[in-house]
Amino acid sequence: MDNRYNIIYNHYIKNIDKNGLEDYQILDWESKDAQEDRFKIFVDNFGLYIKNKSVLDIGSGLGNFAQYLDKLDEKIIYTGIDILKEMVVLSAKKKFKNIDANFFDRDIFYKDNICNASSDKKYNYIYSSGIFNLDMGCNLDFLDNAIKKFFELAVDGICFNLLDKKSENTFGPKYFYYDKDNILNKIKNTYSSRLKHISIVDSYSQNDFSIVCFLK
Ligand SMILES: C[S@@+](CC[C@H](N)C(=O)[O-])C[C@H]1O[C@@H](n2cnc3c(N)ncnc32)[C@H](O)[C@@H]1O
Image (cartoon, rainbow, N blue to C red; front, side, top):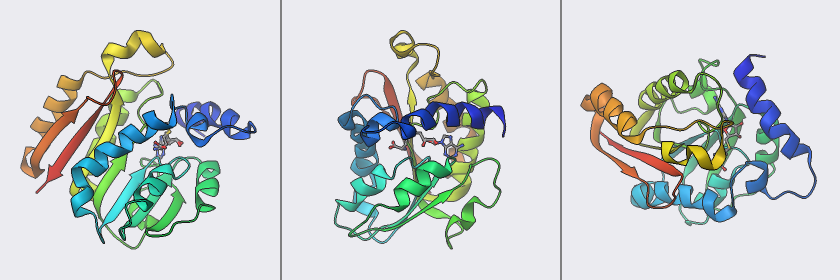
């Protein structure tokens, strides 16, 4: 087990082991609304286009984004991956009415065969919420590599969120904070040939922003 895995495991496993916590508490969100405000950014931007499309949710936690998508009453081919097997075991117990949901334990970096999480080689949409929040001592490299992977895997769109530098004093040093202009410019410069449109959405939270990319 490497250090990054240990930080993630130690952070979440104590919550999983506690009795009586709500999913959002296990996952370390301030509230269910705060968790869902982030899901809403994906749906606000891509909701019109996702019927019968594939969505890969990276760091799917307890399958709450899948539950959120299920309420849209659309058929969506959903794959959730999480580095922690314990999360995947709990997600896999959930029942879905509309979406076709599968969960796998995968680390986006150390398993090259991430695409084999389902029969699709690529996914129409990539979503990721909260995987960049903990300070793992290598966050900017982690983010660069993850964004590269998102662009490799996504056909139509990407949406992910980060903690905002301006909330550094709110949550303290356990977490990692990002400069939104730097991140935006870096993506624009590196992936201009794939980008139809890129935007930052920060109206839903004081502490957090989402990057939304429409791809060509
Ligand atoms: C804050 S939780 C959010 C869970 C879910 N996205 C949600 O919003 O409900 C972050 C999740 O990302 C997972 N994670 C962190 N790094 C990961 C990686 N490299 N690959 C896959 N999952 C990862 C953690 O295990 C955890 O379940």
